[in-house]
Image 1 (tube, rainbow, N blue to C red):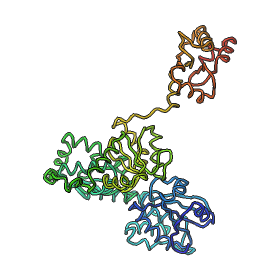
Image 2: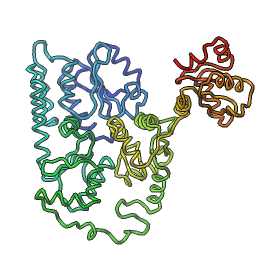
Image 3: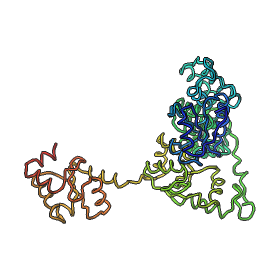
Image 4: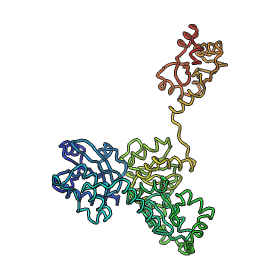
Length: 486
């Protein structure tokens, strides 16, 4: 306490600080993340304004045990504690929300006095300061008024340039492959455009999704009208429609000077002029990037990730049932440093699909949540991997009555299978079958799936009826046909 931020270096240290019961705010940050650095300045100022609360900081990648305990998959990320329990969280760079949540947890500085973190000052900007002060005074403007103010701000941003691109990063340093593609297209078309980095403002980032009814970024606008995202911009560019739409909106287009600016030489011998990397390293990096349709550059290996962000992307790819190759950048510093330059992406993990950079953990997570990741995988021709359990479920449900047996109905390969086949035929029951002798993986997998160690196994509408003894008991009792037709 006392107006400073304490660096946490172990989970035990954090647990002890939280267990003390005082109000506390915990900031997960990363040295490579500009938004984290910006929010850390705000966080430090709030520590001065609320000296009775604990302000704690954790470098997310350096403390994977703590990051995993709080399910951190993107930075900046904040966790708020009261009476030793988690009461709130915040993801993203939103100074106003951070100050509001701190005030809720820590309460006013003096009893009966409003908490007014004036020290936010220009670090948060006048608009944010005004919002925080209004909240602290307890006046609490209504959600409708706040939404209206946000919509006005969004409309102003959209109209701030004739052609406006809301993207991740900046034109000089895009933070995702889709944003990079749209920037390249606009430059090729000779279209002048303004941009806004949605990673720098969570309020704009989330608000614009609802305002435009478009769930992903980038978003391209012309004279205030939404044209679409990367796919639409690419299609319009390929068909020549993009330039026509821009002209129809009365926007002049400069002649593209890409060709005249293109360097014909390769610079110094063996050096790629655009990046400064050696030709040999560039060739190696491109070979690695294209070594699989889906390629993940990560810290550690898929079964042993060495950071929470890498672990999160691995989990997402497995949830999406995607087969992927990986490269442990901790095993090769030349690749680790070179790929940052080659991709113009300063951190890890980095995910590539068909040679195209998708982004890091925060972008992959957002794409999964919005359904964009599945869409991109399908568009790139990446087919989901079917795991054994899914395959078994499909086999079981492939027929209302399904028999896993040795051999086939016309040529059973064991007496028990033959008995069940004859019983079903005598009862006039139509059934499907699978010869478990033809597929050892299915043979062993079905035993585990059903928790039934022998064959044959008879299923009805996806549910296990039993083996030979049970089937024969049902038949002899006159219940078999009724059981298989309920």
